[in-house]
Image 1 (tube, rainbow, N blue to C red):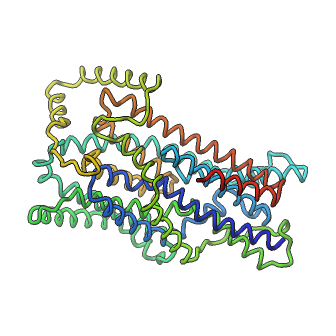
Image 2 (image 1 turned 60 degrees about the vertical axis):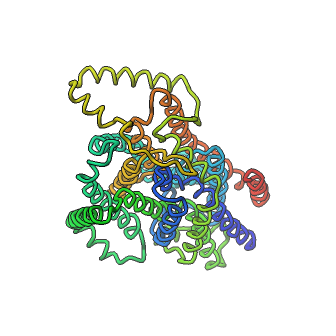
Image 3 (image 1 turned 45 degrees about the vertical axis):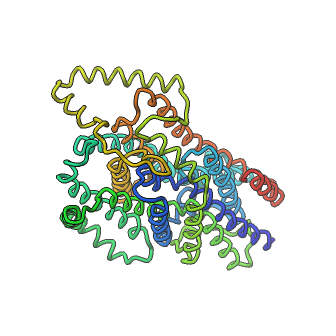
Length: 513
């Protein structure tokens, strides 16, 4: 029986590599869409910047690994044999689910999928255990960390609304300040905007990178928290002055710097936080197997896994390997491009070939919005309305050269707003210890900024809204399918043993091209 669990661990580690590939293919859109959509630099430069963020972020992700071990269920309520069933069910479900979304080019949340897969598989194993001991399902609360699970779910749902509204408001006022003609406003406000944005991004890098790393002394992190306001003010003034000097004397493009730094920051955040979604479960499985091997006199179905509730320290070399796999996937995955093209297409400033069709719901939303807008126009004084029309006049936008990749989907101001706003929201959630999905936040900020920037015109609005609704409905589909499939897989392994494992692995290999 020892070899059986050794094989299970080997399978889990192999599945971790596959999950890294499908996960990065889906989540790369979080940090690539703004840079690629605005054509801030050649694609290889964007990829190098993102790759650096991924490598550095992956080395700082150890502190996030606990969610896979004790975030959703109570490990002290399960035996070793039961824990391994949970982990196998989670990994198999995650790979199949994410690959489906990649195939259709739809972004989803690996955090949500992990949470509901852990929830579904833990409920299945706990139910089997309870019913076999003549208990009732009312006892599930002893096994599932319901408070933590509900906090994560509610936090993620709230972040969707907050991100959309914030993205809309920030982009609207940013466009009023800068308009589509940057020549005059850039000289007056460019350095101030850049100073604020780079300060926010720097703080974000510290909060999401260094703040989550186990290798950083707690005293240093505590000093950062105690002097946050002072650090932010000094940083803002310093960056604003430096950027103004660079802009005046060297014609330095402030917005390009903001977009590239934002791409690096979100890539670092992705690797630092979402790496747990791909290798957290296999690492927990490996730790469980090590506990099992350290207790040779105890049977697998008698070994309590309370040790999993202890501190989490992930091997440095595992993090390096994971980071390299993510970078390779980022460069060569065709499905990553497909998902990125979906989000960039929905945020595109001009009209063109639309990916999504028209639905009754989207048409109804457009009609109601147009009715509200016409009512609002009657209330707004004419001078203010004319002023706003001038600020949002796209005919004054600087003409850009169309390269081999086509024209930019939106300008550098929108790209800067997307990255800075998403970073600030994620930083605030981190400081307040609130859970959220980086995918949901970055997507909804991008959609909110598109709406505020009047990228959804009369002709394209119906199709864009259909696309947004499709993506959002896919998020609920993620939660439902992740829970259901993980539950069914866990039940199959619980009753079918190694034969069920072999059959399910075979199906997974067949399904994943």
